[in-house]
Image (cartoon, rainbow, N blue to C red; front, side, top):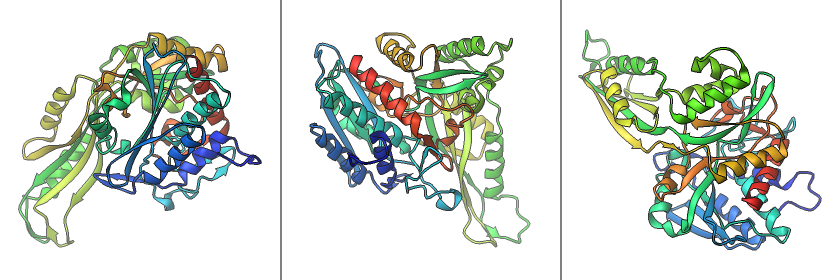
Amino acid sequence: MPPADSPLSEVVTIARDLIRIDTTNHGGGHAKGEREAAEYVGAYLESIGLTPTYFEPIPRRTNVMTRIPGRNPDKPALVVHGHLDVVPAIAEDWSVDPFAGEIRDGMLWGRGAVDMKNMDAMILTSVADILRSGEQPERDLILTFFADEENGGVEGSELVVRDHPEWFAGATEAISEVGGYSIAVGERRAYLLQVGEKALIWIRLVARGRAAHGSSYHFDNAVTALAKAVAALGSTQWPVSLTPATTEMLARLGELADIGSTDPDAIAATAGTAAGFLRSSFRTTTNPTGLTAGYKHNVIPDRAEALIDVRVLPGTEEAALEDIRRIVGEGIDVEIVHQDIGLEVPFSGDLVGAMVDALGRHDPGVPVVPYLLGGGTDNKALAGLGIEGYGFAPLRLPAGFDFTGMFHGVDERVPLDALEFGQSVLTDLLRTY
């Protein structure tokens, strides 16, 4: 809880404090760990009269949960979840210290400001506002803060769901990150509500050749073979394939933009800085993200590897892998490092109506549009328990602010007034739904 004389709002203070706790996750089991951040969250929960429960299946990979009784115990519980880890930040690339939680130009800067310590702070302070007013939420709330989301949740939400499914007893729906934020469509503002996620398939391409001296006349070179495969896959233009969510999104954006085109990419372009996020939801993406080969300048290695981040539409996983094997060609092994599921849930029902209404009470008359997230969240793990997950971390953002570019980007930051708006909307939702 911030000091009474703090010039910052509580939601900003907590988000700043969490950013200052370095929870970098390099993936593959190499992480600083979330323990200190989980303990900070737990201490805050205790300060507002709640009892946190911790689960640390792997040293320092700490998850924390609490359950808040609602006024109406007959209603299904709602899971409200965040993650405490962040992707790495190379300090010399930033204009600020990525873990200082600096406030500048009306914004909070730092790794996690967008993904997703902002939402963690909004969750905590929204619940605190309700409880401090002497009220209860409408239904039971299950607050959960996971470890390892940035590594696909394999050392976080997957283990929690496997070992402690009782944490989520009675829950049928969940809300988390990467939805509820505003975009500019021409001169108009709209909000994107996340109703689905592409499947994640992390693959490793492996090329093998014959080791030799670097000066050799040599055509069995693993690096050359890998380079061809990476270039072929990375430059593939995957075809557009629409799902119910993207079809409805395009229809609604098309009406807002009124550009007289039915081309999905042209309609997405009307969303300005969010266009790249939206375009990725229309098709498979295969982005090379890492290369490993060689051990000396004058030695031709016999093995070369590349990491590829593959995201595919729900239900197209096997077909995409077949296409990938065809594109990279013979002699290249395709190894699956991690694979999860795709999701799509209805843009309808009581929860969707409540989220739309909550936004409407705080920003009247602004339309809400469904969309499919190109990335993924811990909603995928909860789906294994039959829990339908949505992305709803509400933020009203200034036109031209490249919010989607902040995810895993340099100089990640969020406007302070957007955080305060989000807390108000989320409090409203949790109090009434």
